Image (cartoon, helix red, strand yellow):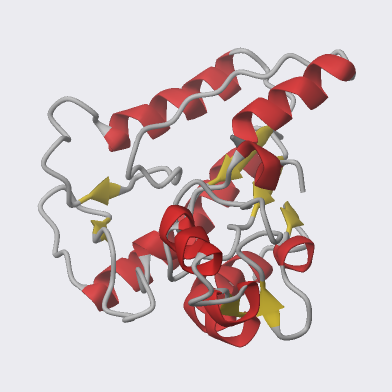
Length: 212
C-alpha cells in the first residue's frame, strides 16, 4: 500500500520510481534469511542486484522500507521472527539476527554512501495485536473499543527499539522518516477510526492507513 502512495507522489513530482522486493527479504546487502523459499526468492542476490542497478544507472536515491522488527524481536512475545545471518548457512539465532541486523545495516549504508546514492529509510507502522477484521467485529458487537483493542505506544516502542537505535546511529548519513507520530498519540497507536481501519490485518496498512 505504501508503494502505491509513493508511486502517486512520484508521478506528481515527475520522479520515476522503480520498486522491487520480496516477502521476508530484509533490504540489506549481504543478508541471508532463514526461509525455505530462497532457492526461488534469493534475497541475498536481490539486494546485490539492487545495489548494482543503483551503481550502474546513477540512481538518485533509494527508499528502504520493511517491517523491521520482523528480523529482530519479531512479535510482542519478543522471541524473534525471521532469523537472518550474514552467512548462507547461519547461525540463525535470535542474538545473531540482532547482531546481523546492525552489522549489515552499517555496511549497506557504507556501500550506498560510497556510490553517492542517498538512502531514505521509512520506519515501520505500529504492529497491532488484533487482526483488523477481528478487531472491528469485536467493536461492532460491543465487546471492545478502539482504545482497549489498539496497541499502546510504549509496547510498540519496546518491540521497535532495536531497529530505531540502529538507524539513529546513521542519522547524519541517511534520511530517516520516523512515522510513529503519524499513527500514535502519547499513549496509544489506534488501529483505526470508529468505522474505518488503518490496517488490512495486524501489521500491513490498508489503503486508508497508508494515506497517513
